[in-house]
Length: 507
Image (tube, rainbow, N blue to C red; front, side, top):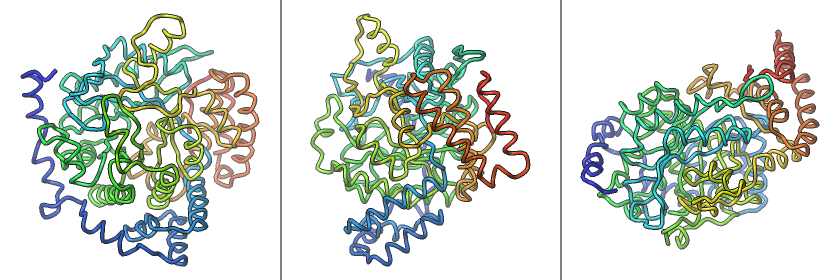
């Protein structure tokens, strides 16, 4: 794989001028000495101050780093319980009680990087290398759609064969897939990507083909740890090229971006502070921060001893705490919990304010089609334990997770309306901060849940779903927001259209 062609491509990826333009007096926005001093200065916050900070977050105001540092240092269990309750209350205030679902699709595990914790790294001889053809991409999309999904995040390794042109073609092909249902068809309505940092020119290509959210994880904000894990002779070894990936995306026109850190590489408190500073700098330079924040924990990956033996692995208790602090620190931003975590941890963390999750997840390249072949008794090379880039903790089907949430009174949403109505970037952030977007979310969640119940749900899920959907409709009818003008009339008309078999109707 490490041919001359790949070597030459690698040399030309990083554009130094597309880093320097965002620096402040030659410095990036992560000042480790400042972060450490803030954590130390707030080592023993008193209860009164912590409650003042919680109250500020409840007003849907972003916290300052000193305030976040104080929350990270709380040791009192009663205070943590108050923070957990506040996290869920904030989530409901901003997003109502819906949980958005998506499916990841891994298109390529070719990679020029050699990250110590990742199964994709080029020195990992255990990894079976593969890149999907466009026909295989379409087959995977059909399998995902047949589960009931409407939103997808597509994942790529960093390699010339899976660079911007391939990613753009992948997006186009996924959007083109239509699967018949009742009187219409089902499709993926929102294609987000998790891919390597790119130049502004390449990012513009993705914007032109209709990319959804562009997601890049810094992995760790601690510079020495980053250097230790990412060899300097690789593209990913350039800390700042990655740090400013989302700044370049914003400049390219992609106004929905997503940050994240891989927890388990360094101190979780430091990483939370890094994520906050990332959000702050995006807000400072572009007027809008990340649409979502992710916080995956490192899980065992093929060919990586670090993924099992890191000194910084995060306990379940601290994981719940870090998610809670993120919910309070950036109260208007979406939080994503994934199937890396087991079912019990996901239940706990959803309960402190997460807004998105995945289900029926396959992380092998070609994994959805391979799973169908296995069910049909056909031989497949797919690694059934899904231990490729990392290991999954929750392999339940979408139907099972949807049913569990419904039993807890939370409605599953497959809505992508805001993106297609222009409610993105600074527009959606304004609506989120004003607690308006959640009302649109509630109505559109009902419409898309109706679709799911009629087109995909098992009898058991449909039974509990019918009870939940009626409860949601009753709540909508009682909300002053929907009693203004003709909003309620519009919603009721749309609901009848969906119930009669029309698809992709939204407010």
